[in-house]
Amino acid sequence: MSVGLRKFAAVAHRVLWVVFFAQFVVRQFWGLPYNYWLSWLPAVGAIVISTSMSRSARRQIQADPPTPVEVEPPVAGRWSALNSPADKVPSHGTHYMGQTYAIDITAEPEGRTRPKPVWFWPIARRGEAYPAFGEPLYAVADATVVHVDDGQRDHLSRSSLVGVLYFWLVEGVGRTLGGARRIVGNHVTLDLGGGTYATYAHVRHGSLTVRAGDKVSVGQVIGQCGNSGNSTEPHVHFQLTDGPDLDSARGVPFTWRGIGVPANGERFTVDSVNVDSVNI
Image (cartoon, rainbow, N blue to C red; front, top):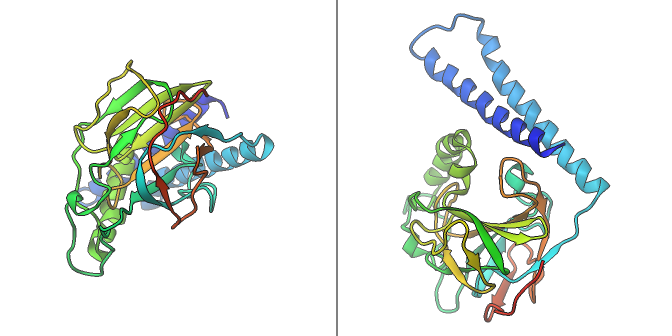
């Protein structure tokens, strides 16, 4: 599937879901001028597009498996992995937005406990309750900044049953309709050269220290971990792709120098970020 076709499919997928939910809202106040069952066609179309895109990505991976790109880790200190491509591909259950080989990581420093999910109370927590919140993010290679977005707020965690239900049934739907920007939240994308791009998602509001067009060196601080976008708690979402546009990009596997690809639940420590130039 070409880049243009992937872009068109992603936009059409989103538009069809918007139309479907718009009908649902309109139907609460006025009758629709067509049969009720016809109102489900946009949802069916969106599902067909999603399924087709997923199959196309899977066939592409099977026919031409991409080679992992080695870069430096995007963080320092003690962390643990979540939703890792070391355990399953696609790691987040979807190829959408180039997430095929994406990974989530959260800070697990010595002497400080990361809050665990609860059934009822507290319903939510502030970002500062989590050790990952505010942790610096580092450039994984010498690169050029191609996109930044840090104007979205950091929301409270979704740390209880009520919070998770809200996240999946209300917030998740709204963010999906809002497109990639609302899902990844504040983010920064770096052009590593050689057709490879690195995206850091859920960045802290107002923390990015770079702007589009800036040149960055490996190990340079570019922002902080936050809790913006489609996120249940402060964490770093990191991925490599073959293009800067998340609507059309395909995922590229990564490996972190000295770490590899940590599996789900695996704790790893980055003593310091290598400031020697990494060439892609």
